[in-house]
Length: 209
Image (cartoon, rainbow, N blue to C red; front, side):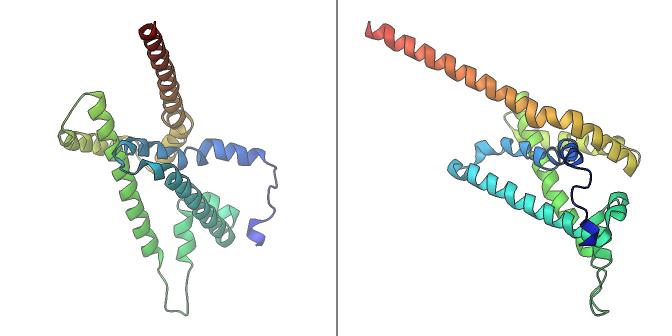
């Protein structure tokens, strides 16, 4: 417990800054990709309940994982380690028999990244099919894969450069897609709904007259 003390040593300002520059957009802001999957869900009544439950559970798991990493590694090591969870698991040793659990951690990260990329991949295909009016989505699979592969190679020369790109995206690009566009689309849909209701009301009044 000494590793996690003192709590709020510098007040709430660093917490608020970390939430804005990191936590809100990554990972929770990325959930905007699921909006492309909502039209294909049969039982839409459970979408809100399931979504909120997923956010709460993932938030608890991330908080618990961060607390464990901080308690094991300390602030200095955790802030400098590229993968704190991997560094923490490397120190696990039980009865001189159970060790090298970092392999399981890497495997879990790879599986999680696979499903994450799959959701983004599918969301990109759905978005492009709607934007370019392509009825057969399968025609976009290979071109999209080529674009993803090429951009993943040229986006950064090394891991520090990748982190710099991520910081820029979290504060400029992610808010646009995760907050800006959804709010804009909501306002457009709200205004169109109001206009349609006014037209229907006027039409019904004219018929009654």
